[in-house]
Image (cartoon, rainbow, N blue to C red; front, top):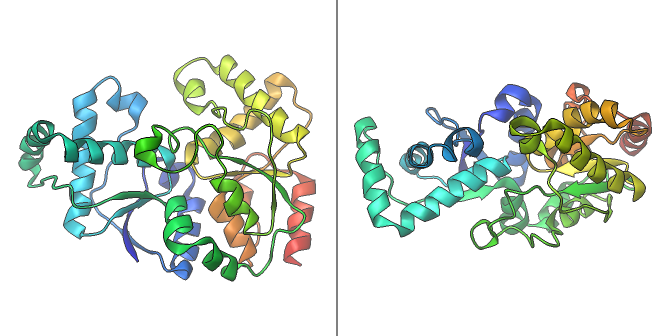
Length: 296
């Protein structure tokens, strides 16, 4: 299956190793990623869509219109991009008056929103279109003995009637995804709590640190070796944010956070270095020893 690959802003600039892994392993599962010239920011809600709602809608509609010209659905690696594009896509399909206003603006760039494509998060594609059993078939090095705490993130869960990903009050899809790789998914306190990325960057960093600290302690107390995420902002917060919060909160542990595709690549025989672990801020010798043992 072929998709227009919406990389977003965050991954290409701050986490290019995640983009690289996507290009390397998703085709092995039958997902063809087409790079698209002309995509811009989705846009990011806090910086654009909240203070300038209509402008944000036009930004998103332009990205959707570009993908429509390619004739492929959009696939993203980002909860936030999925949230923005999916909501605007549905809104414009339902509201003809708004759609006409947006298309009047888009006409200046020779584009038109038609509502002919869908926006899909890679995790939803993997679980619903590829299937967990096909993923299991690609696992060469099961993550046996690794205890993983999954953090689903906020934007992929709500509003549930639009995002259609998981139960916001009891998300389990990521646990199922990590279990199929041979790891042990663990439940923990504050599982549904936000990672605090938005609060940290647009609000009160001290409050964000306390929020993140509660979540990390819940994971650690439950016996997690590492963290699993499917959102680049969540990865940044649970990695770099953890490093920064740890200094303030005097945390006496470190929990490496990895993007799901990194775990998947490890089970396919890639090394920690090859999945970009070296670029992460939070590292743990115990976790690394377990992975080396698995890959041996």
